[in-house]
Length: 275
Image (cartoon, rainbow, N blue to C red):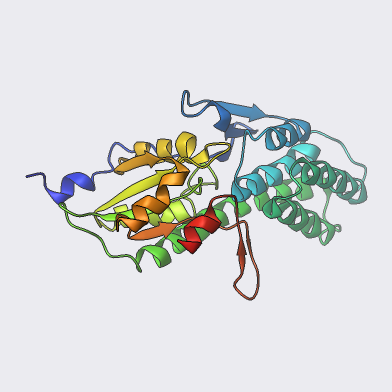
């Protein structure tokens, strides 16, 4: 009989940030290449960042916001300004360019606005100091995202009981809300990672998530890297599995959450909520 400890061994798991700063450049996981190949894309200009956002090289609102924040720095990094007013103007232009790359990504406009407002409030500092502050704020935005995701993961995982070797807790996950959609760890998928860390025996049914197949291409790949047991299913089979009592918990992210608790999300999640 295989011991429970064998199911929780994550020593071989490959973890990473989907967006990170290295050697004075922005590096991002090239998500359209997955799962066939793990490659990264390097950006040195704000125009390159905007194109990557538009082409979905980077996707997932938190990851897009992080990329946009570094894009703000790249917009001013090599330029020379006579005063802080010139720097602020350049950041405003960069914000317009980046926000237009994915108008529906709230985290993107939020991150660019946060940086622009911060620098606008510090105009008494010299240009060199302000540039440094832009990069520091971008790094802070990334670190905050990871910390928030880990707290969210614990809140969710604490509500879910683990199963046994014979009968694990079966979770259904829609789309991709993990390390690829965020800077690291993930939101709804972060709950699943935390369950594994808590040594709760689990199994995940992964919706393929049409039409772009984020579940089939990305979530299944992520779970494979983490060594978490899974089965990939077509979207239309989730109702059948629920009717057969094969799903204990359903988790997915939300594109919008209103103050009164209403949520809006991608195609496929409404059916899961109703069933």
